[in-house]
Amino acid sequence: MPGTFDWDNAEEIGIRLAEKFPAVNPLEVRFTDLHKWVTELEGFSGDAKASNEGKLEAIQMAWHEEYQDQL
Picture 1 (cartoon, rainbow, N blue to C red):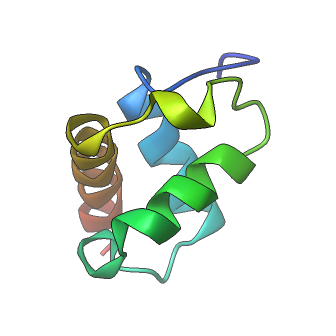
Picture 2 (cartoon, helix red, strand yellow):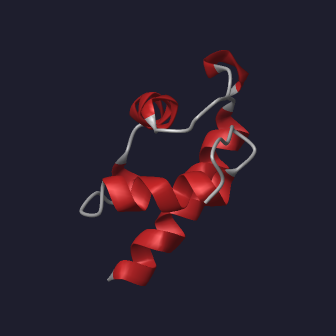
């Protein structure tokens, strides 16, 4: 895993969110909560204001893929 990552690392963020919140269905998470959780991840170095709907959707889908793999 890279030491630091930002909004453009959707797959890395998806993996970390799946590890941190294994029982949470990513498709049920509001983007406001997703944004907060991403910025609170250890190693996240992105600017909180640099996110947008497209980046959050990519993260949500990467997380959902990890979530599906765990089922």
